[in-house]
Length: 308
Length: 315
Image (cartoon, rainbow over all chains, first blue to last red; front, top):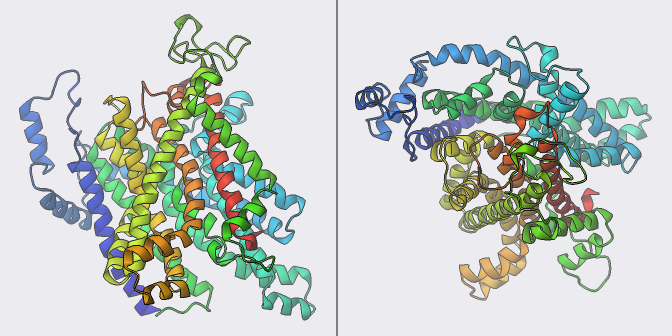
């Protein structure tokens, strides 16, 4: 286990270097002028452009820039944006909101997804199973923003049960509907995964043994079946935490939530790449680390899986 | 959202589809015959097929469905709600929402299909090469794939498009469509590579491949005559579902202002243009959104029906 962890950590390094390099390359090297339209209606004066290029190292070759970026990241120096506002401060304001939103979304998809999956898996072909199959099909086909606008229009504008946009405090009650929207797609996947897993395990020898021993149905399902069936589901939920963070870009845009996604989106539309690069790198890091944790968790949850 | 990285769970939810052909009768039947026999009895298959034909007709001959010009604007009618004259009402510019929704099908389907084709070509080549040559080719391609998968989908698309086609620019029709197609495929190929790779690896150790090799067939012949046809099924299923998710992804990017843009007519743009009018004129947004969702649903439903037929174990 220890050796496996170390090997996985070592494998993480080239992927992390590759992705951050890719992000740096895409942002700084692809055609497009970061200072276009930065000075109002007229083009920026040469003195400003050259001063900015020197400050952010844009006059250096890409590898030197990348090296500088790595050094800054490792020392925790996120620098300032094009308006000279520290990036770390902006990140500090936005981070807690997005974490709250993502955790809420994970909780929603776990509770609803798993219960729907278990119910439909236990009674295969039954009424609940059909309802779950059809509703997951619909959830999978609705792009997240459609679900978002639909709920905003229905609950916020027509029925007026929620405020259509979230205030600056972003309290848990306000975040409930946005989190549901963010979770909708993964909820469908969770339900389907749980169902497949339950259906498969119901035919397994250990379940037959448990029934033959005369255990109550409740114990067979609750202890024997559920525990084993939920392993792949838990890993799925873990893997998706990272992608929830980037899915938040759209959800936060719809409900006007001032989190990481909103910050990133405003930075991209405002072409402030100095914010884009560190945030995108951070999101990638969260994504990769959550994947790694999930893989390690797998071995803990399921002792049949042996590493090495 | 339409994140293709999750769709692979749909396909690989159970055992490899290609491996599970049931031999119902004694005479040998191909996988495709079997699949067809199951498919034609499934209601969901016929529903999705009908919808697919409708959407394809809409894309090919929009004038069959509406006689109006989607670009003709009467500002006086701006945001008028649905009526007998204009079934879906008028949009902000006073253009007929029904006509624009019908004409929007073409863009979405072209983008979805071409991006999927490109993904299949890129990912398929990479996957077959990785599986066939194994060793270092496999390691290199798999690592490169991991790097691309390491960037969350929406994030990657936003970064690339935000840089090469920022919201302030106004590239022409063909350019922006090509850019969106390439970006979708560039970010999506690693998943297809994994599917192609695993199914080719499965096929590689079958006796018929050994036999072909023993008879002196070269790598080209083995790949095209034996490996590809026998590992096509999961790729096909994934591709069908991917068309749907790419259509959703295109709309999402257009919504963010960095995907397609005017003068292209697309559902995503129509939704994006009217998000600020959700209180006063939701019709201009809800109808395109409904068509978009139905179109995605069509492809996902079709893909799932085919997958279930290919793999009876899942049912």
